[in-house]
Length: 325
Ligand code: RRO
Image (cartoon, rainbow, N blue to C red; front, side):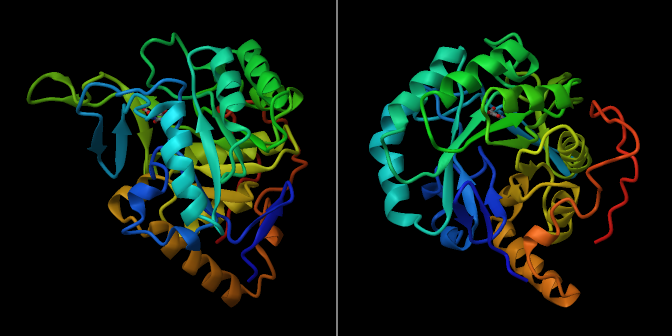
């Protein structure tokens, strides 16, 4: 099976990327991951100023899943330009890099793009409008259509590179948010960020995470991510990237069948840094055994685009959501 997929004039050698926040800027995993074997990666979200992040503990296991409240710890725009991008330029030539951007005001995203767009080494941006862990923000931008429009239109005016918008699994108007991002000039949508949640330490009778609540990821997020992709696919023709709970080729295939053309591996990397490489190998083997020509033949193959009933929110199950893998 041909693993390569092309969108926006960019060829991804396979459809598996590492997800934002789980691979730093690539450099952090160089000893344990063959980065050049990947379709690509999305960097940790970058803010204008460096951030130290939230009080520890910042991560905890909850059953087979995970909860985090890292709090956007990152080196800030200047060091990303002076240290991280030069390393990426030298070491990542085949794997494609998206830089994830975050901020507390729409203007911060615009300033980030202005500060980065002359740099080389990355193919596009993932606008993180859905981080659940910034205590100084009342709610993520993605839950406010005006803010989505402002950030996307403003960044659109400042770059010709592909702009992805990362959406939230708990958005009650997910389809409308997707359309809003598309209308403002987004080129693709990443579904989904972590699901806001809480874990309580019963011995000490307090929240497990130093910051209190956080975002849930791992196997428990898979179904929510799939539903989000299937829902949004009916509302927009934009290319979709599926993320949430991918730990195997079967999970990745489900995202492809639901309508994503790329998948991102996140939490699975913490348990096994080589998860993404394994998933790529297994995908190829599966496709060969099934006699599939290319990954593109699988995109949306599990769910017809024109469904008998309208699906407007992730709370409504998509009709005919039967997936075979
Ligand atoms: O840094 C974080 O706490 C974080 C971010 Br920016 C995000 O988008 N999603 C998440 O679960 N954690």
